[in-house]
Amino acid sequence: MADGGERPAQVEQETEHPHDTEDLVRLVSLIRVEQGWTQAKLAEAAGVPEAEIARFEAAEIVPAKPMAMRLLEALGRVEPGLF
Image (cartoon, rainbow, N blue to C red; front, side, top):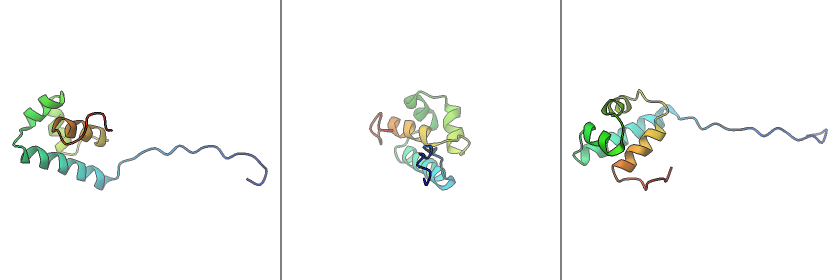
C-alpha cells in the first residue's frame, strides 16, 4: 500500500460449486450401485442413519463434500482421513 500499511489478510472460505456437489453425489451413488450396496449398507458402513444417505443422494445435504468423503471412505474408494 502507498501509506506503508499492511493489507488485512483475506480469508477465503471454501464454497462448493453446485456442479461440484452434483458430481460428488453422482459419484457416490454410482460407486454404491456398482458395488451392489444398498443405501442401508452404505449407511451402516459409514456410521450414519440411512435417511442421511437418502438425503445426500437427493442432494439435500449442503455442503456435500464432507459427507461425500465420509461415504467414499466407507466404500473403500478414499484413504481414511485423506480429507
